[in-house]
Length: 512
Image (tube, rainbow, N blue to C red; front, side):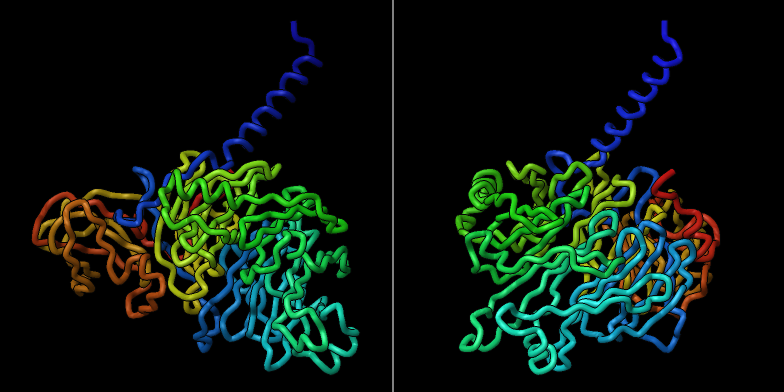
């Protein structure tokens, strides 16, 4: 018979087993189902489709700038930067602005918020003004706590800072460890007079404690660790889940692993031949036999496996945590300027570049594919920190895309009320055959010729994320008519008239 001690032990084993089972199911498996771009979108489950549900605009109506960076932290904070150089901090609960600050320069290369919500790191690079530095700000008020510059190794620091500012190294990219206690920054140079200093290709990785504001480690000459210095592309890097190691990838499909505390090189793995074999055999890519396979946008799973995209077509691969092998996942979903991320509960994966591609990791199946609105695509889409939704930054607006319910209605040749309410810029689509007219009250807004089983999304649809139409009421009941009466599938909007905040509050949380 079980005694109390045995029962406690049993429950402990059961809980630990459940925990690791949940960890295992939160990974990308052998392969992700490809998103077929020729299909009609949005897609989702039988009960829900994903669409743009709510829009939160900047409080300053005179500011018509475009949002170019969006990031979040685990405490529920949302941060945005516009192309006028303003940084905003929003509450993820209701998108009220906690503060707004003018940054030191609007020429920003990269920005990241620490997962623990304690600091914000910003990379500046503008040759004409010499604004080539790393800046760290605290998140309570957005005040600067640290500025950091690096100079080539062959000159005295004071000479470069005071006299030759334009030749200092510039921070090109950065990434935080998962607990926010470490910040890795990659510094590059623009090239300078090689007659005076043979360092025109010098690069340096620096590890910083963003709270104590001290440099923990730095390493120059990292390209030489790969036995190759002919990579003009950016080197992408990511911390291991426990923050003890950091991985760096280059343009030849090589990955170097370092100890974080001293940046001592552990090993270098070369996946060029393996990728070439996958391209030529599995993907039948006849022109793939070449030496360069640039790795883009490294990220990491809970189990330590690395995720990356390779080449211009952005084929996505998974690299085992021990760097012993690489596995092909899916094709044509990434790009050289993409961003791969996981939802707060690790149930979804998203790759956003010139499109937002979203997968459900329980089924390894696609959920959403939609074009993004501007040239800063990879930086402007992030998972909402608490709600089961994603945030997209557009012109002075943060848009919420989330699951919305489907309904089936019989549409006559006269306007039919659908029982759905939508706002200006809110996603709305209809599936059916014939010429479909959309109206609010008796005002015809749009006409669309739809084919059988095709999803028809027009000017108010979420696919037009950059749409800034503001001439509709806050919320009205949508009416439809068609020249071919019948049953139509409607999705988008909400089943009752709600404000943006009510819509946000009604969304499911990531962690139940």
